Every structure is written in C-alpha cells, then in structure tokens.
Image (cartoon, rainbow, N blue to C red; front, side):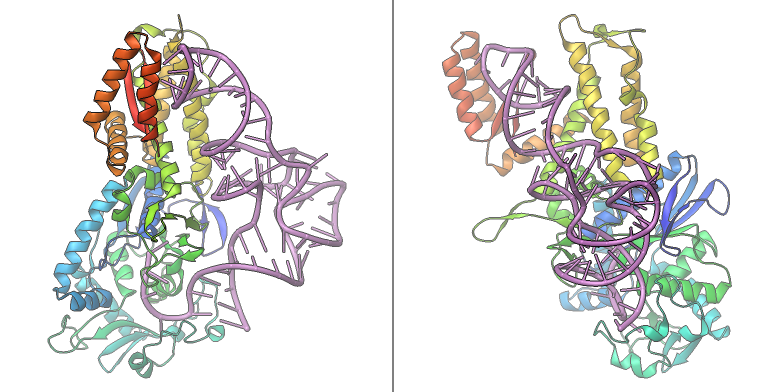
Length: 499
RNA sequence: GGCGCCGUAGCCAAGUGGUAAGGCAGAGGUUUGCAAAACCUCCAUUCGUCAGUUCGAGUCUGACCGGCGCCUCCA
C-alpha cells in the first residue's frame, strides 16, 4: 500500500513517490517567532509530524526540514513595542516554540534552519535572480518580477490579470511606488541606518518574507523537494512566490507535491494573530493534558476546518473547552487500557489459547491504511476506538473468574499500542504518570486536596469493612457532590475527578 | 470581480457510484453490597434544496439557498 496525498498543485490525490526512491525530502514552513504558538500552529505541526512518522513507518528515509523565521518585520515591530532587542525577542519565542512542540509530542525536524544564519544563502539567491533578470533593484529594495515568470499563479490557480490588486486592503504604499507590477514582491527590503539589517550589494537591508524559504529549503534539500507543506493561508502569496523565485532561479520544479492544512476556527472564523481570536498552546497546557490537544487535532481531516468551542461563565470568563475535555477523556481511556493490559497477571496469560481477535491483529494495518489515504486521522481514531474496545474486552475476559487471555492476543495488543505510538505519536508516555497528572490537574481546578480525599476514602473503607454501607454511601455521596468519583477494586479504592 | 472550500443524527465527524465508520450525549443490559470503570445492545430508509446522468448518487453534473477562506500580516 502506498501513501496517497492531496496535492494542491494538481488539486488531486496522488501517490506520494519521492524523486529518489526511498528518500523523501520535506520542507514545512515554520513559524515567525514574535509570539507564542497558537492552536493553529499546533494543528499544522501535528499534521506534518504525523505525516513524517507515517512515511518513516512505511520504510522511507525522511529528511524533514522545518524553518524558524527569526528575522521579520513583525519581530521588529513587536520588539519595538516591548522595548526588546529583536534578536532577543526571537530567541525567546523560538525557545518557547520548541518547548510547545515537544509537549505536543512532535518529533524534532532533522534540520531547523533560521533566517539569521542563512543570510549568505539568501543574498546569493537574490543575486542569482537579479542576474537572471527575474528581479530588479528599486531604491534600495529588490523585487521579484512576476511577469518574468509566466507560470506565476499555478499553485493557487489564479491569473495575474484577474486578481484584484489590494483586495485585502493591505497595500504598502512605499513599496507600491517602487514596483513595476503590483504583484511584484520584495526579495530584499531597505533598512534605515542603525535599524535592524545586514549589508548587501544593494545597500543595508533585510530579506523579504518569501525568499528565506526558497534559500533554506534548497540549501538543505536541493533544488527540487518532494513535498512542501504549510497552512492553507500560505498558498497565496507565500508558496506561489516561493515557486516563482525558486523555479526562476534554478529552472527545476521546486516541489513535486504541495500539502496544505486547514485552519483552526473560532465561531467559524479563522483563528489568527491579527484577528486576536487565538488561544496559545500554552493557555491550553494549563487546562488539559498536551496529548489531548494532539488528539483533538486528529479528530478532523487535516484539510477541513477545525472549529473550536468553549464555555463561558456569566462574567464572560472562559470556563472550559468541551472538545479538549472530550479529547482528554479519550486520551485517558487510551492510557487506562494500556495500563490494564500491562497489569494483566502473568498467571492469567496462557499459550495457544484461541484465535487472536481480528480487531487486535488487524489494527496496525488498519491504522496504516487510514493514513495512507491522504492522512485520514479521523478514520485512524475510529480504528483506535475499535482496538481499545477489544483490548478491554480481552482484559475483562482475563479478569473474570477462571478467565484467561491468550499470549498471542496480548502480544497483538502490545503491537497495536506500539503502532499507535509510531504512527500517531499517541500513548507513548507512562500511563500512570499521565493519569495521575490529569487527576491532579482536575482536583486542583476544583480546589480539592488529595490528602483530604484519601482520608475520606479511608473512612469509607473502614465503614465498608464493617458492612456499614449507609455510612460508606454517605461518604461517597459527599465526594461525588464535589466531583470525586470512587473506583472500588480488589486492590483497594482509587479515585478520579469527573469533568 | 477572480480562485477555492464547506453544508451527513441532539453535538463532533469519516465516507474509492453499490445501499450511512467512529466518538460524545441518550436508553436498556452484564458486572457491582450500591456505584464507578469496562464491556454488550439500541440510537440517520437518510446525507442543505431542486432538477439531471445512472440499473444504482451522500458520493457525478447543473441551478439555487446558507456558511467560510484567499486575492501581498498569517500555520
């Protein structure tokens, strides 16, 4: 089975085959580090993380490059507003970003190039475009001439003549007067004396937004990439411009496949920094297990919009995120099931006893099959639901009086959890640690003290031992009223917090 | 004006032209001192509307209604 992906360039699902058999070269547009990563970023990078994991599990060697834009006018602006040095600000948010990515369970890219360390490559590429008459110098700026690249618009399927110039009402008037064509875009922007900038053959300045990705991707992956990814908002102009400048420079196709993920939305509107309607990943980490955020990102197909809901109190404060809470329950279910399986007593496991349930045996393949089909993560989660149900059934059976589980079935279940981690990056943590963290976070949110709860449980256990069920139920009723759910078992009484 | 996306149960959400996955919520049940957890059963004759193509359409075509994105800040 081969991986099929939707290619923005052709608008179709196509088999993904790297130019060099067995080795995929992938570039994903990373963030501009002037603020914390929000849920839109989280979604994007979880999507490409799953892609890379899946391609690797299919036996491909993957070189995954994801840049960090640490030189940009937004950084400059934010630095000025906050009285920070631009470099310092960028470093701070780049570090925070790395931490957020780790908490989301994303693997590190193989290369994480930064604009600040690739100025030489950028200058060389700009010069090459000028030499090839695809770019021109204008009053200290350098612009790419879109008319010099007849295929301009092929990615976003638009025609230069039919685009409404200034439709976004964001025209830069200074630039407009320096351009030959309104769609020409800056490769290099003039910086004032003393302002953030670098020396160049055209004077002191800084790179335009698009040129960095061309320069850095070609430097680390060569002239032609197998796949280039990013958010849907990058199709135009960012990726269109990358294609134009790269292909104009090299004459080679820039990327063989283009992949774009849909937005996280709020009230059906795109979540974005400029609209101010965003929640940062960190805001959410305080409320739910980071893995629940990762899980939530997989509940919708990556190209479809993902609408976010939350609840408010009378004062308008955010009280909760139902979708994340549901995702957290599912993540807890994954770990509870994994722990049950691991805790099956050895004496309950017997050799050669009965067939392995097909939901267990077939799960790794089902997971791969779902991801092969344009990274269909919702289907992968549906297969996961079937798998977990069957694992619990296996455990239920084993734990019944005189119950047994076959060693083969247990082994198949373990292989299933392994596949889950490899493919989706879920369920790889220590179950008890995750479950305890979830419980403690919820208890804290309700202002409950674990010591007090456990003292209550002890009192109840004593009452139960004396068969004083009225008292035992009274204590439990009190705890339930506070959101504490008790779980009696042969090993004692555990507790969780309802949400 | 141009390009593109979406509309599936109370909610979320998959769905190669062959007769509606999965999750949440809800209803019964197994289990339990009672619960919880876990498991089992049930829960869309129907896929925004109307036409058309087809033996057959949620899936293809057209029109319409409703929502959204992009057209040089964006993941």
